[in-house]
Amino acid sequence: MKFLDAEFVQGFIRMATDGWDQGWHERNGGNLSYRVKAEEVESVKENLTAGAWQPIGTSVPQLACEYFLVTGSGKFFRNVSIKPEDSICMIELDETGEQYRIVWGLVNGGRPTSELPSHLMNHEVKKLKDEKYRVIYHAHTTNIIALTFVLPLEDKVFTRELWEMATECPVVFPDGIGVVPWMVPGGRDIAVATSKLMEKYDLAIWAHHGMFAAGEDFDLTFGLMHTAEKSAEILVKMLSMRPDKLQTITPTDFRDLAKDFKVNLPEEFLYEKN
Ligand code: 13P
Ligand code: ZN
Image 1 (cartoon, rainbow, N blue to C red):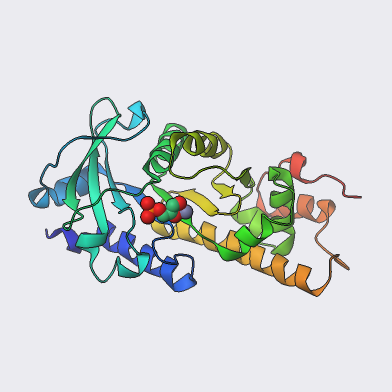
Image 2 (image 1 turned 90 degrees about the vertical axis):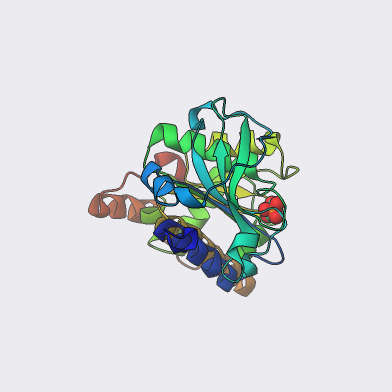
């Protein structure tokens, strides 16, 4: 099969295009990675060539010998559907989980996203918890970023405020959302901080920068990002009208919702406000 005809490649390209359409990917902002299934690697095998091994910049031994489809560093989401072979690549990890090599794509040179350490460390955490997780997505979501300038940078505050702004939020992300304070992007330190939050959550905010989402497939991961960002947009609109709420969803309401929708909403997020 031709590489670009494979369903997983098409799904990846469509998700990048959907993110661009949302306005979350100015210039080269954001990045996307997918942990490719063994049978999917097999289906495109005839297209693969091996480049030189390069250091990942961190160690992900649990992902040894796995393949990932990833966006290229400095590449524009706008161009992923227009010139995919220039904008994205497939990489293979070595048996130590410390090096990668490009096996397809980036035909005009370049390297995988500068956030590869964060992507791979998040993949490792998620794979260990649940083999079904395959997608890690980083987007520069406007309203979430705006909120990181006015809300305390605490998991419990962001979780509770986003839950209150849209009834489906506690059902879509019942575990809540984590917050990483501002850190230099692109390195191992921010990757360690983010992957620690990914042990508990499927969503992590990078203060004054954007958000990371993890999920089983492209639809669920995009939907998660979209739901959290939509809720943030409602909060930004509400705060623009007046600083306080006349009414909202209460902790008791959340407990009732949890019962009917059969989700577990941790009590740490249902605190009394004063
Ligand atoms: P890359 O172009 O290297 O993926 O970087 C974009 C980005 O959003 C960094 O956080
Ligand atoms: Zn970014």
